[in-house]
Length: 166
Image (cartoon, rainbow, N blue to C red; front, side, top):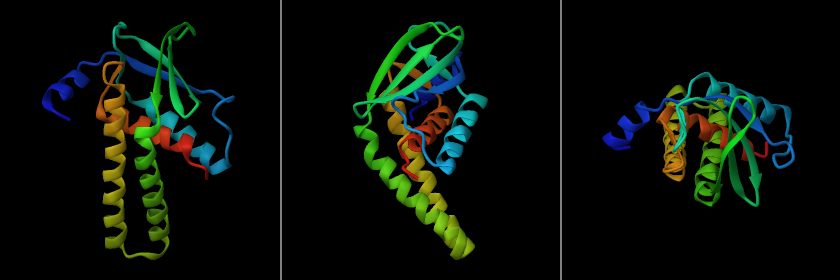
């Protein structure tokens, strides 16, 4: 991320105060996956910078759904009024989500059997792929919603948890 984008993200005044998953388009999953989704939402709400372009700095509610392989981000007021809806193709994220899933599987397997140095090496790779996915997500949101890198990382974690078959 260049310096101008970093400064722009620092000026973000909006914040997510809730994230709602559309149960009609996002199927329930295994208890482990549901737990990962809940943790991703909790972490995202706990600390984020989320500013829809053209809207005043405020507290926002994000409703996520997946329609025809597209991520639908419906931004609402705390009172439930729909302010804006953005639809993002998931195609640019497909490869990185798949790569992230593979490296996470390797990481969890390594925790059971590998040496600390091997685990650390896999974890560094995992974080690198996670950053790549977060950067792609930031690029996809450009001109629609301003987020900082930490928020993009947390959003990517949630997108990953939505697609993880468990």
